[in-house]
Amino acid sequence: MNKRARCAVVAAEDANTIAAVIRAYHECLISPILIGDSELIGEMLAEYCCEKNNIRIIHETDHKKACQIAVDLANKQEADCIMKGLVHTKEFMHTILKRENNLRTGNLVSMLSIRELPHYHKLIAFTDAGICMNPTLDEKRQIIENAVKALIAMGYEQPKVGVLASVEVVNPKMQDSVEAAELKRMNQEGIIKDCLIEGPISYDVAINKEAAEIKGFHSPVAGDADLLVFPDLTCANCTTKAITQTCRIPVGSLILGTKVPVILSSRASMTETKYMCIALAAAMKLND
Amino acid sequence: MNKRARCAVVAAEDANTIAAVIRAYHECLISPILIGDSELIGEMLAEYCCEKNNIRIIHETDHKKACQIAVDLANKQEADCIMKGLVHTKEFMHTILKRENNLRTGNLVSMLSIRELPHYHKLIAFTDAGICMNPTLDEKRQIIENAVKALIAMGYEQPKVGVLASVEVVNPKMQDSVEAAELKRMNQEGIIKDCLIEGPISYDVAINKEAAEIKGFHSPVAGDADLLVFPDLTCANCTTKAITQTCRIPVGSLILGTKVPVILSSRASMTETKYMCIALAAAMKLND
Image (cartoon, rainbow over all chains, first blue to last red; front, side, top):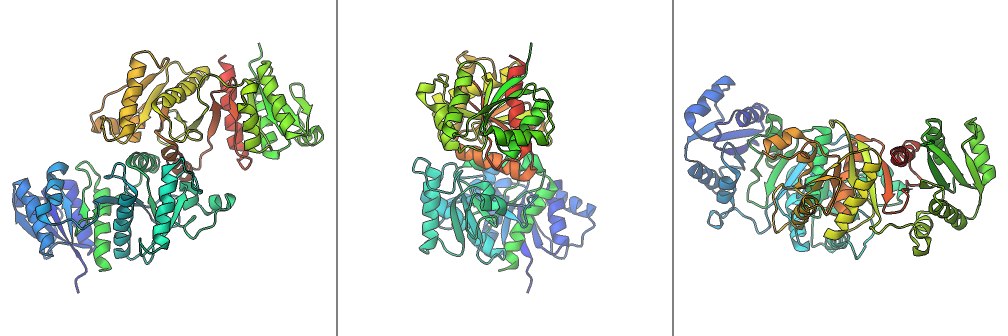
């Protein structure tokens, strides 16, 4: 059985995007479906001298139509993920989210990012660090469910989830801590499934066993979290950007809450970042 | 004129505290006033073979009374900063903040922390990453004023201040961005003085000129911020802990909004961290 993820790339005629796609193709992670200017795409592929057995090219220079082709492929189960190339985010996401296109699941659309931190013994995932501004408690549940579903698809058995706050005890004056405890309760009562939620928990206790021991905080999630959940977009943005600026490490991210994962890396992103995103989407297919 | 800061240490009989104090003393930064068990303190000092010309010891084993002595010294202008030793934070801060002790300025009490980030060309200060949970707009003004006053005392001429959000344009749905723009306006109208405020600004644009250029965001603060202001405690806590966990660098921090700066480093802090805090307080005296 072919476990390559079929990745539909919209406006694929972009050097960084093609480079990332070809790398993932050569590593047998994906079968690319390149939608765009077939002449330009052909020239770019020629530079990589790649055999085109698994590469499908669909000629469509109109961006709007190219977006629609990708969505249709996903709906026909001919694509396992959709990737943005040289098209504008607004135009791309408009087609992805349009109700008639029927690509939404019941849940909120959210973002999951994964990176390799120094001083941490495994990968760490963050959510939502890109889309939801001020999620309500119920929206946080949906964000967690999206992320857990994706992590399970990537091969995790029961991801350990830390809902971030600045404390480990509920403080009624800190809404973050109250909602974190509520999400833990929903997990304990089986409302949020397939994961182990701890919260409220602070960043250092979630990823550093020593910090947890000093604070006398005992939880299987402490020092061993797989997924950290932010209270709001500003907190997520400041924290992940601080890490990125400090570590200069590539980040993989996916849009979830859609039938297939969507890769939205910025047009200015490095090849390495685009590759990481593709690898994440491919990992979801691998464990299908 | 002696520019050493007179540093009153409450319950000084703590090895890490004494080590930090002695280092700062040998570097001519401070004149210690060690309040606590004089016998224990004497033994600890003997280990450092230090000449005691500038070291004043006040024997007081009752922690409550030791706190009060430090506060009284500050009120009599015989101490330029107060440092917590082996005493509990609650007992210590209770004495510092008690109205009768008259140690408050008109402003909110807040925390300023300073660290040396990798990939940044100068020191960076953060506020408030320790005390105020959900500051209102007016409280944010007070937090900025506390920090700017301290930075000026340390020798800055006109600190560049970035009020953090996840965006550079005001979004009415994001209260952080609205208040950041308000704080910028207060600065432009001369209500918040002696600094240059930019906001809303995201973390990467504030400390990375390239990120600012890519986003086409022009401001003297972009890529050159001296002080970053967080919207709330959870955001501050997640961001600063992410940096600390990632970089493993010592942090200096001070409590402000009191007549003299207060050093509150945890009893478990490393000597290096305690020393950094003392050095910050001493820097405020140096430029007096």
